[in-house]
Length: 197
Image (cartoon, rainbow, N blue to C red; front, side, top):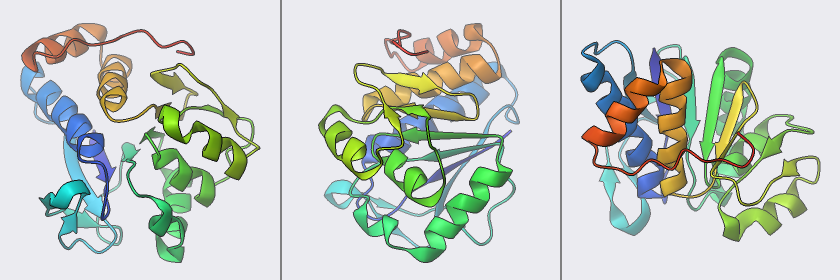
């Protein structure tokens, strides 16, 4: 299963490194590296400077990545990304092609700007919920949820909630036992509770 994580300048570090760790650890723990093949994708494929100057070299650009089974769109200082016509067009294309898209934190803003999510239950970081409701009144924005599963769309709250959501996705796409073993390997206390799971 190909898992692509979309990153950009000023992305929140744990928004992408957390899910990356979950899926790569799950593959290692399972004993089958092909269970999840994880890659980082950026607009151009060149180095990205995430929050606090954290430098990352992506694996692919939006023009040359392999077909994805799961796309994770992360949060951070997202407003600049929302103005990039090519990125919005790429996200719209991925929404039409990729079976499952997940968002962490303010990543939901990018997806909502690029595609029609009318009526979908979604969540984001608690601090950004008022802005999400104002900018995208067609969304059913939920509070007090670590993540929300809407079938082909799964959204999570901020930062560490993305780890909880990613473990949930491991359980959904493989099995709960693998998710539990992954959390144990990471020495992470998985919060399985989600109000709108």
